[in-house]
Image (tube, rainbow, N blue to C red; front, side):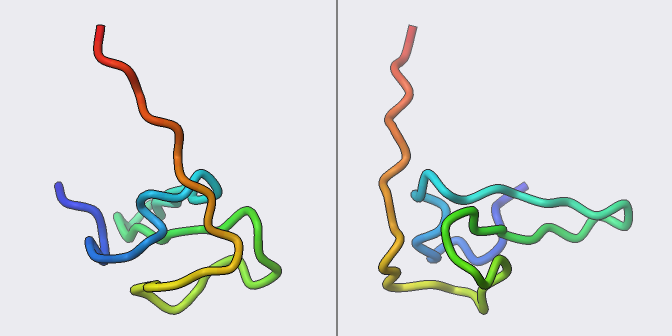
Length: 57
């Protein structure tokens, strides 16, 4: 399954959390801003912090 709003900057941000409802809806939740659920897609954000790269084994 592809992420919602694939062009959003949130997918590459360390502050992003995916929230899935019992009905199957997925939301992007920001842990750094006062407004937790931002209108998507996000192109620029003052709180953006790149997610650390995961190393391949």
